[in-house]
Image (cartoon, rainbow, N blue to C red; front, top):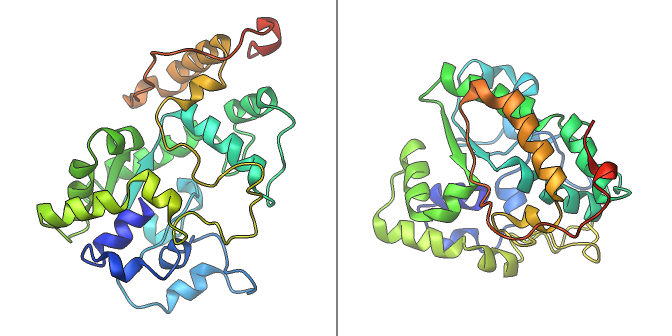
Length: 259
């Protein structure tokens, strides 16, 4: 989504994003550039508009201007099972995070919200409140929809941002942002970022839907479904988990039953 938005604001011109890493074009609000003590939010104060930034912060921690409906937000949500799996691998490679002792341990921490930026459930529900309060200021996009129909999503995001693109330009953006292309692109694959141990995992790993099935046991999935129903029923949010396929190897279910 960072690369898509960056291209939209550059009129779909791939040459204009070919020499600057995406993390410089779309800085993270809560981080600071390597080697400096000035946080990105201070640098952004002085940047000319339109300013494009990303954040992983929960709704309760974003700047007050956002909570007042200023600016526009594209919220990218991914089904929580794939999110849990992706975050597990990110923790394994990141030198800035505690390496999980095991998948089972990380699963419990994720479900309990004992991970960076807290509970997935609280995070998405908090931002959903913003979407209902300021419906013209926030676009809710599902990662799975980006897989199913990337042309539709890119056109929708561009329209929302007030930068509509022609069908031909939308096609250019979609082709540039294909997962395999981004994985091979040093401007998007973070290959020059020494915060990550690429012996543990790639930054852009699989980019698929339902990769969670290679790690979740049946009991993990059932427990997660129960918790999701309890926490998210009132939200009306449903995700595509692509439930066909095999789960992980059989293990002692008692050891993996969430309590």
